[in-house]
Image (cartoon, rainbow, N blue to C red; front, side, top):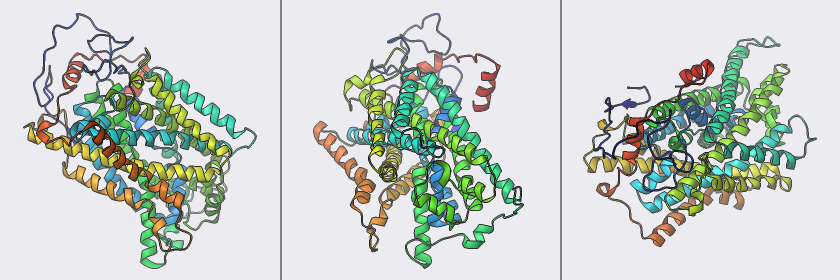
Length: 573
């Protein structure tokens, strides 16, 4: 049993049995391609989720374990871990920042455990969007799917604008419009190629983020012990002077609590992971083996990066640092507002700030690339379930839902808004909007799991027979649901403070727009389609399962092309 609480159970040699009988589908061909299941090639390739009921599901299973693990990391680590985390330090102080990030990781663990069990059982395209409709209510799946699509699509222009800001750290010579256009074209090229090319691109970009945060953690350890040009052995000095906690809006205990709460809100926007891993399930090779490892690895690595990253920031810079405060106040471009760069400047370390800025640019570009992928696949999943126009099911011969990619890139054009509006305002609007959507998304995942759990019990299926079983269920799902639901409404609390100047209609709308739209989507689809909340005994746990079982039985791994690829597969396998 692994330490995340996901254990292997009920997997026998030969044909697996996951809570039900297997339906023989006739004789298999004598030969098959390496890395592919037996089956009828459709539109130039094999279907990924093997959905026998829907001939439009044409994505291909080409992503290896290393691709999926780094996609999960790449989609989560953007500019927030390197730059925006400094705002949390200013608002709450080092102890509040560290505690908030640590606590929020426990909610992410709860969501991860819930998603891992469901997705491993049925690794289909856009899984949790479709699970919400299958295990709870078709209308709930409609609302959850469109919420996730809006969330991912809105993040594309957010990261494009961030890339533009980062480039202007060096020079303002290149016009912003040109930078935005180039980035969107690159996203288009990468995402219309075969999925393994997207996976390979994202693997190397995310690996750069991986190395950057590891390097910054090591940098912090060295300089705090005196390994800097000033010979200053400062250790945890800033936890004592000016202190571990700062006051926000009010003095005393209330002010310190609000500082912590602001850090927790920032953590809820910054830390994710299980959603990005899950979205790759329909294009993963041998998913019942690969997906639990990916959920495992991504959670542990992201937890280490975010928790240690929040600790490092509080070690390097005091919460009242003038340069950091000025950088956020003046909306300075690129890594200028990064606590790491501020610390490097104070310690008279030259050269490194430019390296950090270059890697932060890579991080922002990679994150935006992941959002294009996830948004397009979420729209594709909605189309497969009949909750989006049917033409979005159309895939190229390479297995790419091309019209979905085009739709997401059209939304990416919103990044041109910064050419005529204040960039910081546009960024803040997107941050506020997608924060609420992300929390709603996590709540939907946990709700879907509770429907799945109750259906297993009602239909007499032991969780011990599942391919993977998570610890602490259903308590973990309830913990994740309650925590994310509460934070959904807490995110915009500042507009309600009885202080002059804090009420803002734009802030209110962007903090709670999706909170209001979600029930409208749910009730609208429910009224239109006359859907109902499924009773546990009515839930269909077997749709697509036989096809996944068949794929698993007949799967032959694609061999590594060279020694280097074998090493990578071993490291991330």
